[in-house]
Image 1: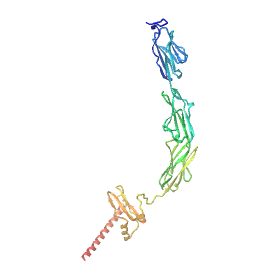
Image 2 (image 1 turned 60 degrees about the vertical axis):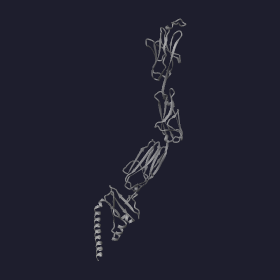
Image 3 (image 1 turned 120 degrees about the vertical axis):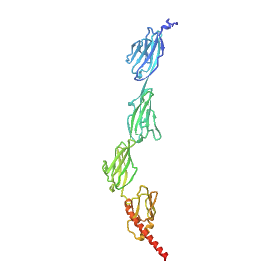
Length: 426
């Protein structure tokens, strides 16, 4: 058994059995510190906030006026200091002290962490500017540890700092962007984080105003008479204004009717519009210039679509089936085409003409793998205008013509053979 200088033995003096644990606690939570003392005897345990030299409790009595602080004893060796609803000001060093002649004490540290929060009064709000101007956005955040701040676009596209620099994320409390364009319009997020969840953000909307621009993909449109046609144009404008079509006679198309159907849809960005105008049952009166017009508070713009209504051709032919004068031309019909095609001229011809016509214009129809092919050679303008193609509806007439031609050919053959026979006999 050993003795101290004051004459007391070691087993009679209070002894701390374990250190006070350091605690890190988020603001708003509760915290409890434990001080384990053996051989306390008649001595008292006091809790002191060392940073402020403030006595909080002595024994089981609370000295401070802070109602969030309390003290408890487990009836044996442990004394607990409890703090409810911890605040940043509660952070610091806490001392457990025993009032022996030579004071004995040990300390524990309370660290209060604060999730980040943004100070709106020190941060930018929504901003509006004209295209080409610069803008600086500010964001202020607090927390413990001190938060870091970064900027992103809400739609996850790149932040355009200037003509040469675009970043997905920009660090720092200030976001400076020079010469804003319409593509930079949208919502920007100021994000504050310090490792203590949750991170927070503030949404700042940037509005870029500009004069409308109008783009027409097809400036010349041709439509056959009786058909419908749809005109289109693309408008970019902010703020959005009035977009409309104007007819060649100067009348504005504001409502849909049996003749005109106007439609407007939004594009991938708020400032984009796709405008359509459908003209039904087109006639000659519908030919002319149609104006696609856009106006807003910044100005206006327009583009012209010229519509030409053409009468349908009597003999519509499309390349590569166009027949030129004096040329040879073949036309094939597949299995799904007409079963037979016959050609004839609409005017009567003499016998001499017919022989020349048969020799120089039309040849026999040729079939190959269920395909029918007719060869036309040495065509003249008169041939093209007079020629009529008969399909299945003229099949019976064609068969009669072929039958007559067949019997005439047989008769001529027999006559020719008779002449030859008589010549040999004589």
